[in-house]
Image (tube, rainbow, N blue to C red; front, side):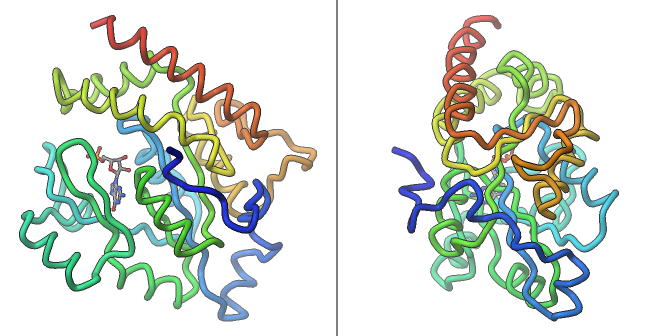
Length: 253
Ligand code: 5GP
């Protein structure tokens, strides 16, 4: 089943685009910041793209998720994630402290509610880097949220990046690849698919989509290495091909 669910009131690829308001206008008018959901296969490099986006452009607030998974080498508590026990996570679920939460591979992940609400109120555009079930919950709660999926160009590239970071070798990495196979069919339900062939280009495409500078009709094409796909048939074709490639990738190492 499609985790994003049926798109209520016929959400079209254009329905969650910004309505012509630039960031400055948002602040001058004291309007709420946008809510931007970025999903992508684990290991696809979306974290690096988001870092690049925030280095190059002001006005974003990145939500730091809570997770029950163990920190990877180099990850810092409170920066990469809030690392918590199962008990603490469950306690916060009971207290309605999450905007959304989901299980992924062997752990729980959730978006703390307060940070998002406070930053949106302050006029900052809030970025959520979350997987597809969480994205579906956000879409149901906030139909105005922009949903963007970032994917590497090929499944082989995903495998190379995932195993290349050296933290998810063996069975842990394979579980993430299997999860990618489960997630791929959800790609078409995201209004925007951006291909991460090059980090800089992908970050600029992301910025163009968020600000509304890029539309399917705009004369400037997407940045090379950051192709933007909104056509439903093209998104479906990409998802199908990616799933088929993943089948082959499972057998190659
Ligand atoms: P990782 O363990 O690789 O850091 O993250 C695994 C997956 O969980 C990624 O797809 C990541 O985007 C997603 N994720 C991270 N934080 C959250 C969250 O707060 N909620 C949900 N639903 N997914 C999250």
